[in-house]
Length: 197
Image 1 (cartoon, rainbow, N blue to C red):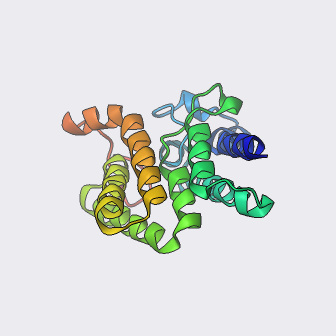
Image 2 (cartoon, rainbow, N blue to C red; image 1 turned 30 degrees about the vertical axis):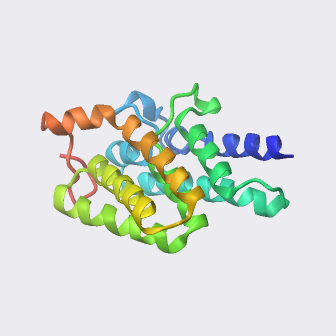
């Protein structure tokens, strides 16, 4: 049963909301536009706020649902393990030729299930950095870094600390091209109209 839960978590994470919204709602493959990424940020830039919001919420909720599977099925699998597997599915989705997103929204969804207050603090850090920098990628990495510092130094929840370290490493790895663009000052900034500059 443990293997089944982890498989279901991976398959949930593999649901490519960016691809589905693009093809069903707009008749395009989001991977052929913008940055080519399946995540919410690229969807915002290419298709607008409505489509981007749908994708972000969908990507987040699949992490939340995956983390909740052990509770629903009364299986002794830690919710953070199931959630982390869903994040892997999001990054390398079997339903989208293993070309997925950057782990941010789905990781957030896992934290939403496991610790709602911690999730809210992550959102707060993300929004503050976004307001100052206007870089979505930098805001995502700042939230990940905050999560690491908070769990390592201010909690004694070992599974949470391990999960955060793993998920943060995913986020930084998936944003390595963004880091180069930020340093080169070529990373697109967000306009409050919802489109990048």
